[in-house]
Amino acid sequence: MPRYKTFRTQDFQIGKINVEVSRKNVKNLNLRVYPPKQKIQVSAPRSVPDSIIEDFLRAKLPWIREQLSKTEKFTVAKDPAFIDGEKHSIWGKEYQLKIVEEHKSPKVILKDNMVKMHVRPGSDNQKKAKVLKEWYRAELKKEIPKLIKKWEPIMNVSVTEFGVKDMKTRWGTCNIRAQRIWLNLQLAKKRPELLEYVVVHEMTHLHERLHNKRFYGLMKKFLPNWKSLKNELNGKNSMKNC
Image (cartoon, rainbow, N blue to C red; front, side):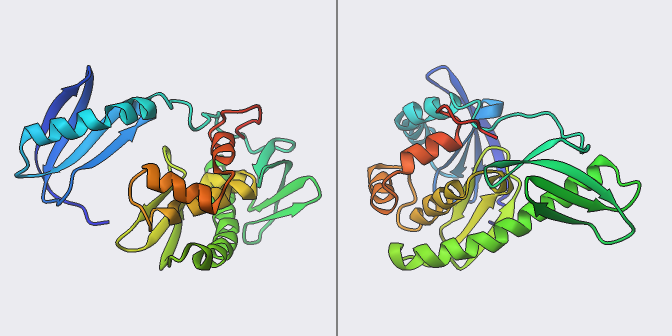
């Protein structure tokens, strides 16, 4: 997405909530909420009156409060030690780690209940983490195209491009204009059904940009059990958010 120059920044307070508003050369008001940081940002056209921004924020206030309450959307886990026997989640199952040091290109192999990480001798944890992340990325890039191909004719939309990145506050995003979706690298740790839910969610934005009644109606049509999948993904039931 293009980066717009910020001409000035203002602080608004709506319902005792502070909002940072940046004036930019954008056409629409764009609202972003970051629950872990308890931060709200708005990008606003340079010429739009303050009163319009205030009305916009008041209308969005219930949604903003709901988003700010999701401070535990992502489980905060300690950094892995990358030692033998340590457990790592892959597609919703736990595997015991086995480190194999050899003078060959790094690779990851799943076998039975074990995940073998082949690394060069002397590799530190940063290198091992990178090897595992790239393997997760490769796994997702094998599965995501299958899901897109499955759902495009069902949903009557077209995805021109997809990507995988390690996001801190979102499971996925959609660039409607470019028809491009991004999926969170951490989804490789979840059950495949949860990856499918996020893919469908982002593809539904190609029909409806907002999270409104129409959007959720489409979600129910395409994926009737989407709410239970969402709750599982966000840790709102008895299942562990691995």
